[in-house]
Length: 167
Image (cartoon, rainbow, N blue to C red):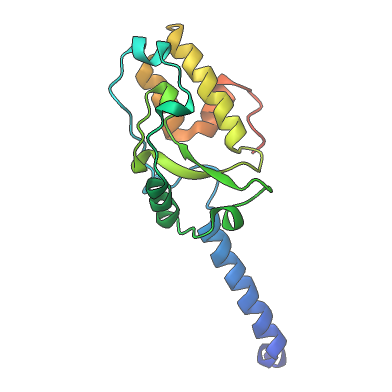
């Protein structure tokens, strides 16, 4: 064992493993945003505004500077290379979606990957279901926002697919 510890190959491999662990921890901590960075922020919108606005890209107020602030906060310098779990990389996403009253604010944004079982596509499905539930009166606005901001993966299992999204 002592001889193995003196081997340059042992230390080379140990350093590579430690670097990989450090890189992965910077790159992606999980399917949920870091609650110390992305706390979620909503706007004070009425039910009528939430349900009658066409939430297309023309209403967005997320700037490239805001996106860069989010990447820096999460320790990402190359969002496609570092957080990619699929060839498409990730997007800066709203924790509380705009269509459900979420704000275009840095504290409501996080880098969410497209790959993996619980990627951006699954969260988009949940956002649409929450929006329909709010607008049909089956869910209060605050309940919908909480479902997205507290733990969207649990909410996906509750509102979209009881089997969850694969975790």
